[in-house]
Length: 529
Image (cartoon, rainbow, N blue to C red; front, top):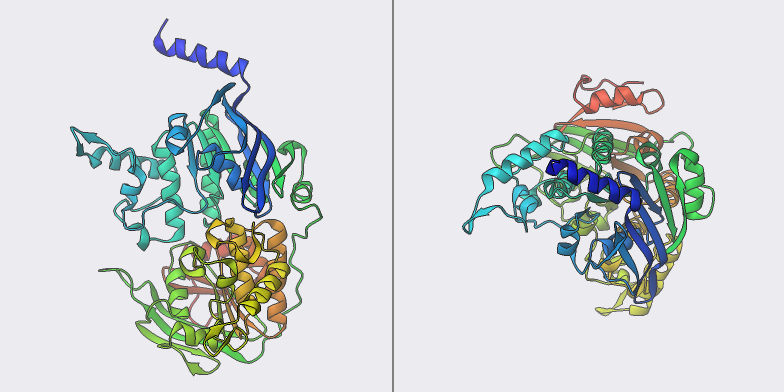
């Protein structure tokens, strides 16, 4: 009998004896002021795609961090193929064949993409680093799974979407058999999501077992075999996807029925709020402009959405608009005033609010408390200071009000360190701060990234209310469903240029996709009704 036949027989015997490759039994994990996981049991079958669903702060990422060795549970045990295992750290997890794509990337900003992928498993001969073989494997994986990345790019210089792909490649490079995907599609385009779904199905068909955390019910219905639902740290139930619906899953998740359609009346556009004229923003060394000759306007009482595939200049455009980077040429006018060279604070205090794409880099000071982050742009106002001294009671009261209104969940309330909060609740904190400030222009970039369906419903309603109260909203989104349902006008950006202005009432998703892919383009001034 050959060695391969013997191994196959052993594997088949294991599968027959132990239907579950991983079992997390009665897991309890506590943090100060909160029980993140309360006696949760999760069973993963070999070769299945198992979705983990729950509201922001329900304990999903914590449970997966326990499986990956980042946290140690207070109670419970983990079994692999029926045998109890100890996972003290990620090295133990990797040794057991467990890999994880994290929601908040575990990348070294100053390293290249290739260096990040091989970090910890560097190929070497006699102590000398050998990157050629690793590079070939990364390029092969990148090509096979459609995760196109530049292995020589520095991580801090690439988009959030590219960083996500680097994380996925990092796991695939290690040939793990149990794959944890923590919100892997949060920053991917619809086309990239479809490709990733195909990748996941292929991995499962090869015998790999996948745990898939997501808030997107369409993805669960499309790719998962079973789904386990958590709510406020407790186990609600596990269902077969073939026997359930989106409505049932959303009800299990939030405990009530959720509306999936945005209710809004036609826009009543008023005075001009934002006018951008022939903006150009430099690209990297030796590259053409990231943003080239972009002109657009947004009026009060309307939502204008910039749609496009990630990496086509949206990030650079928003950074220039909000003052994070310099404009090479062109003009930005807010309420008729030229703010092209004004500071970020000036823009903030003169009518602009900004929900940033990267909540960690540009949205929060992670080691500040939640209440400190809530007043980052307002602490100098008379409401929050007197004679140069912070009025801490006023800050606390204001933060508690926003926490209540926007349902921001944290273990210790207003004094919680922002770093310790779930990604979705960090996002809700930023949305609450920016939407509550007095503003005439709201620049919202991926505002519902990483949020559950209940929170998305609420944020969409707040954006529409803001529009109806006379705010000009510039929305930048990779979510086609969000683009189509929220927008009053759609501007498509491709390779740093506006290539189409479309009416969401008449354009089809397919036609929008052609503009996004660069296969279709309008002449300047032309509008598709």
